Length: 443
Image (cartoon, rainbow, N blue to C red; front, side):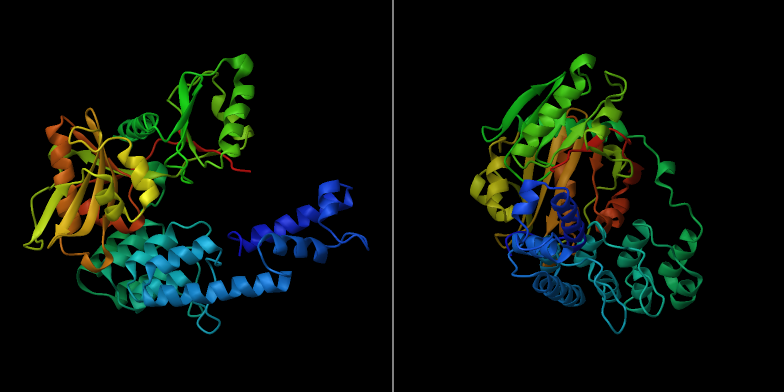
């Protein structure tokens, strides 16, 4: 298959293609059969061929196969396979025909935390889907392994504890679930004490990206746009809050076109005040999507519990100073080249540390140090080495370095699976300032 397929988007694409052909659009007509009037079957056939399949039924069979493979991968806990299948277009809400379980149900029932982390962050996974027994993924967890970490992750993404779950559990998990019953999940009620710190470090990261010889930049209003060659909206961005009112729409269209031509998904970051005052509305009219539900975690470094805990006796945390080691730690040579081009010195604002066990890399942490603010950008521990204290040792080392450099506030953009981990350190879940980040359109 030439590229991933979203089958629902494919259906919409086929209907749009049919409408265009019936309206006489020459490009659409060129993709349809010439011996009859345009029909839906021909439009679907054209879409299937674009995805490397000979027919629409063949495309549906391919997607159905991906769905079955996704269920198997979630059931067995092969998280990287789950992610690969989602990227290839596996239907994220595929169901087992007998139990009605989705991939999220299967992973939750068996405590497959890494697979759950991918699934709950994938749009459009239906986190609230119920199986044939009427259970959500949280219910599947309680009826299965009742893993407390998995249960906390599922509650953190919006699943509600139900009365029967309190009766089916005991001890600390039952007490924790009971405490959550009826508690508001409205993210607008979360604190925003360190929201500006979280936003500031995002700006600092894109500013640093402009210094890479691998990056392409351009001036935009009072700021800039940067494109790094990576298909990742955390690697491409626009930082601009002020544009001349008479040319604002023109300049927005220009920079969005520049990103689109380079197939660069990006974020447009805005300060609290904009010029013109309706810059946010103009971005939305141009197709940008506002971020209004994001969260981060934060705390003053001095308030965190960074005391050493249980960890392997031969664990060593060491800075990464060369591109080869960084590529090995990240398992991504292209990203390693970009990050290495930003500097790997001990005093660089972006710093990388590896956890070594008997000389082999067991985990990596990356931290951005920007004055009084520090952000943990990535923490990754090998799947077979987790829950041994390695992640805690990496974060402790990184934040010690940040404190030594003068940082007093730490932030992190957590995944659902890591919220309990950072809560244990003393970080608090907060609301990221709404309408300060806009995702730019690709088409």
